Amino acid sequence: MARSEVVDAARAWIGTPYRHQAARRGAGTDCLGLVRGIWHELFGREPEVVPAYSMDWSEPSGDEQLWQAARRHLREVPKGDPKPGDVILFRMRAGSVAKHLGIVTENAPTGAFVHAYYGHGVVESPLSMPWMRRIVARFEFPLEVS
Figure 1 (cartoon, rainbow, N blue to C red):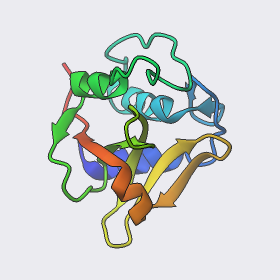
Figure 2 (cartoon, rainbow, N blue to C red):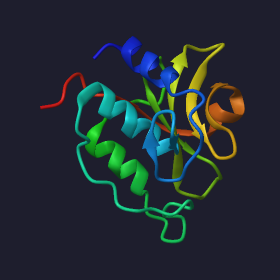
Figure 3 (cartoon, helix red, strand yellow):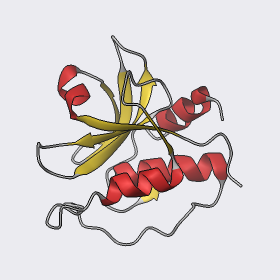
Figure 4 (cartoon, helix red, strand yellow):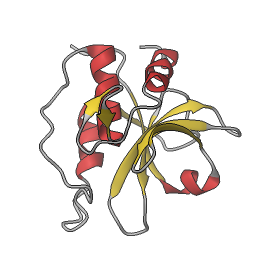
């Protein structure tokens, strides 16, 4: 799996409206749906059925459900400098669970990432310092899926 394929797939989702729990390019998606949709486009069938989830994810319980799911299917790599094609996981507030995902499209220092953002839909945003500080994990898509 070439990183450029992941970036191209992510950029193809730009303009898709935000829809909680959806994963359909052009129709609607949330941040998890964006990653699920890219997985589907690159590999076919998703690796597991995603149960219903609330917009607060697992904040009340404090369980890192999104992080655990990413570890099951993606390859976790050292946080370091995000590279194009990486899936980055964000903690939006100190002390809360990680609950936002994006796909890196450009290297630093002018880095950028594609993400589905509530109220904005799928956009490509600068990977600015406020976003960089929120990154808690970095993943790569597998080279292939069996």
